[in-house]
Image 1 (cartoon, rainbow, N blue to C red):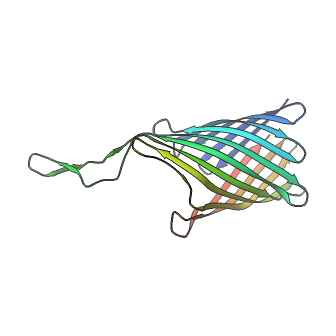
Image 2 (cartoon, rainbow, N blue to C red):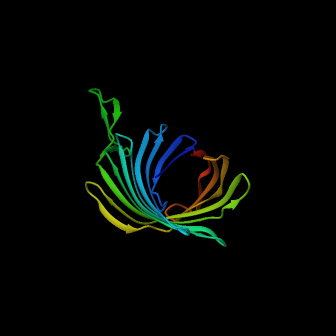
Image 3 (cartoon, rainbow, N blue to C red):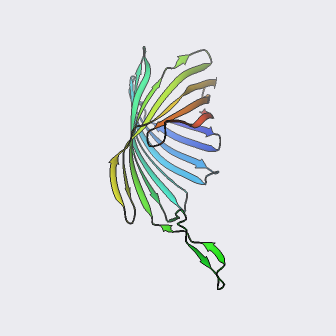
Length: 230
């Protein structure tokens, strides 16, 4: 059995993966941990991967939470294909269930007054707990270029929500999402610094098209990450 540890830092977020491969190398189990101290958000997950010389298929479950207001569960299948001529490409299908606790809604104009009629405080409606299920599809492409000490991989990822359902105390709706597309594009660098040590760095840009909003907008325009594998 071969054991591998990967870490990656996305500015204020730390991702850690510990994987263990079978003797043949065809099967891998991985434990996943994600920590975002800025948002006080934490994640735990598990992934099972089957790999051949030209294909890698992963089933993955990740739960995340902030201990107070929001919880999320993601179930994914990730299928990647390796070709010599066109690089690596694949898809990811995800079902994401999110739960929210009670929260203060927008002010409706109500407020309290004292015995003299003077304003004391605004009254905000308390919104009931709710949940949303989102089905999402992703297309993935990369083209690794092997050099002496570094592997350079241009990357393109397209993400779109397909279907959503939402439920709270009074509302229960299910609908196909309007056209929306997140495009992530950039480059990934794997530096081989030793026999069993790799330094990973990547820079990624993000553009969003969402018809539920007006036109075209930029979202998280630049992401820089560094990580290691050994």
